[in-house]
Amino acid sequence: MQKIIQPNNIEVAASLLKAGEVVAVPTETVYGLAADIANPRAVMQVFATKSRPSNHPLIVHISNTEQLSKYAINIPDYAWRLAQQFWPGPLTLVLSKSTRVGDWVTGGQDTVGIRMPNHPLTLKLIELVGSPLAAPSANRFGKISPTQVEHVIAEFGDSIHVLDGGHCEVGIESTIIDATEEGACTILRPGMINIDAIKAVLGSNILVKEPTQHSKKVSGTMQSHYAPHKPTYLFNSIDELEAIIAEHNVNIYGLILSDEYARLCEQSYKMSSIPADYAQALYNALRTADNSNCNIIVIECPQMSKNWAAILDRLKRSTYKSAVSC
Ligand code: TXA
Ligand code: MG
Image (cartoon, rainbow, N blue to C red; front, side, top):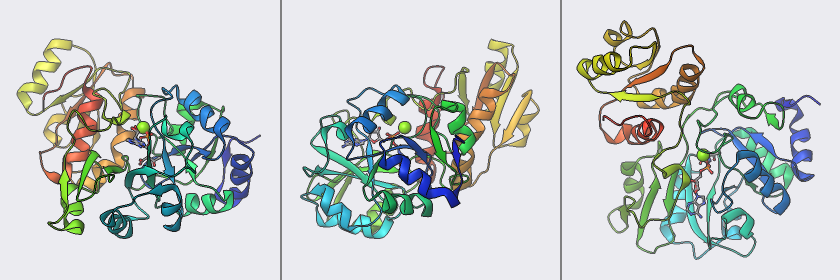
């Protein structure tokens, strides 16, 4: 059977999910590896396919806001305001779970991460299945998230079906907010909806906290994540780049913002200086670099600012095992 399902065959994807199969689906952030949340065996298959530890909870993807009150309880007012403002979109709310959400989805936790993705195909798919879809990013555990159908195929070959929804528009994973507390919320994972956008919706009555060591564990917040196979280094200046070149003396692939650095690399990918465009291209650039015949990857570090916070977070995690220099 053809493993890539075209949009006009979306009913095929719905039938597979209803029959308990795992299907990779497009969202505006990254592709997800989806299963019907009501089917424990299918959800277990998601964990097995990804080689993901079973205590790492999955995000539940819904297609309308009524489902929020079906699958979560004790929802603070401010969480409704965030949902209203940002859904469908790249925001996940962690809330107390209702009994409709099985332990197999949440890794035994009493909370559930819920989001409404902004992709017309997946919204329609959830409606056709008649049940929300549990989906982590469709990559092997700890590796680079997929933003194109080809990336999903590169991860899993033809072992799973994938619904073709084109290139993901946002390009990095959703902002995750712990909204279980009244009067305060915590950003567990930064995303392209940044802290200022959240504060603008919540006003001064709700405290917006950044994560601490004691915050709930999020697998994408482990120090090493989103990692290419090749050693990957961040640099800030020509001196740092030259030091990396001198130390390794191998072929280099650069993810480069400034043209002046490209001539020092055997191959390079020109990155945009606009955060939204940079984020959209990032995982494809990392995969292209990883698949090249160069031996190491160097990444020019973007400036520190709130608009770059989520990108810097991903860059630091994808370079953790090598070195962090910015
Ligand atoms: O943009 C996204 O969020 C993508 C698309 C497919 O929706 N999904 C995604 O899923 O990035 P995943 O599993 O790769 O990352 C979701 C993160 C995990 O690190 C998980 O630990 C965290 O969300 N998470 C899920 N439920 C949680 C909960 N109840 N409490 C704390 N963290 C939770
Ligand atoms: Mg992931």
